[in-house]
Image 1 (cartoon, rainbow, N blue to C red):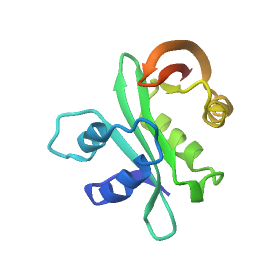
Image 2: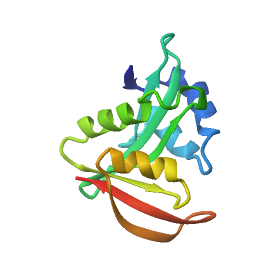
Image 3: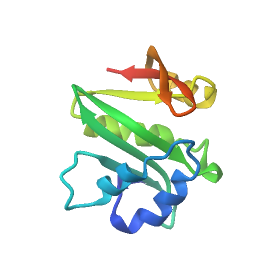
Image 4: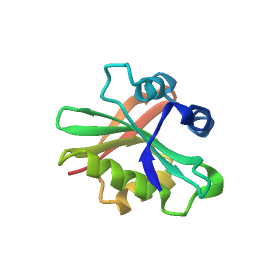
Length: 139
């Protein structure tokens, strides 16, 4: 099941972020803070008990929605959760394009994005702390 994240999901989402090389804890905080004036969105994919086992953080801007984080717990990968999160984000994007950045050596993520209709746009030389990124976009 895909649903918007809630403040009660914070511990599970922080745990999911630990699987990312460069998590965005401040963006997660902003997305979960109902009082914050931020357009950040957090969606979760839950297991049968309702526990988040996948998450997506996105921010709209300039005619596109930037997917800042997409992560699925290793024990729940290959279950279609990342695809479902991307589909839910696209549905909420109200016609805007989706954009993602990924490390050039992360072939698993690159393959997922290509399979979900994203096209390679450009290479960003110093996007990540440890180097380049490839930007993909789906119109």
